[in-house]
Amino acid sequence: MLRFLTPKSLSNNGIFTGKFPFLSQLESKNTKFSYGSNLKVNLDEGEYQFRNDYDPSIPDKLFNISNDFLESKCENSRIFNLLAEDVFKFKDYTNVLLSSWLKNVNFWYFYILEQESKPNLSNHLEILNKALDDSYWIKEKDLDETIKNCVNTTPAIDVHTHLFPSTHGESLFLYGIDEMLTYHYLVAEYFQTAPLDMTPQSKLIEYLNLKKIKTIS
Image (cartoon, rainbow, N blue to C red; front, side, top):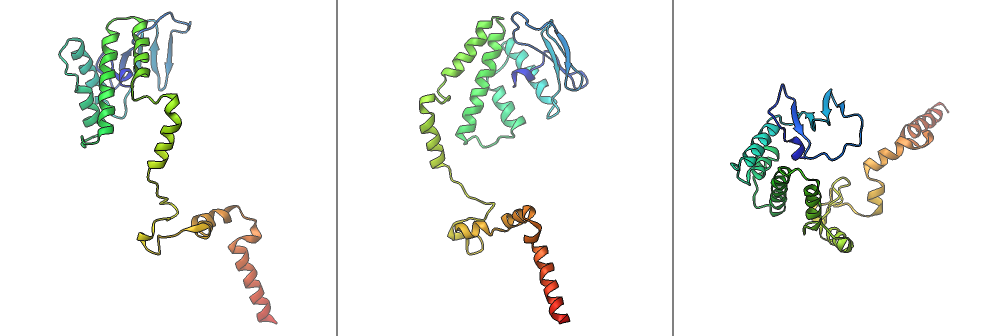
């Protein structure tokens, strides 16, 4: 995603122009077309236009980072810092999982930039193959055991139906099939689809009619 948000020039009225990393033989005869809100693609030139309404400063920063990298003036931690500070507002560097993910994104971004400086389709295949070989991908033979481990070690609390442990007192410590079936959301949802003669309104009318009959008699 970051690669395709990296423009080849700074923005022009909020519109950026990006460059396709590598185009082999074109299969489409339609090489110029529009998409989105009148953004243009030119496959002959290997260019596309895009916006970033989330934060227009991000593509400009990516542009500067990629240019500095190609001119060997860029530190390899800049994508990590850009994502952590500008995109995710990430402050907790003790979060090992997120830090590891940001480091991987940082590595692959610069790896792709480096390979794109040598226009060769095999470089892109190399990127994919290397990613598939990395240890953070789950191998098919380990999938069953990994899912079981995630399910068995992930704490889950059913906040919606107030099924909390006994430490939460009588108002929140609800359990069993009766509490599930008489929970007020479920009761309300049932009466939305129940036959008219089973709704509280019909029972109220029936009760009032009976009371009226008894009063008259």
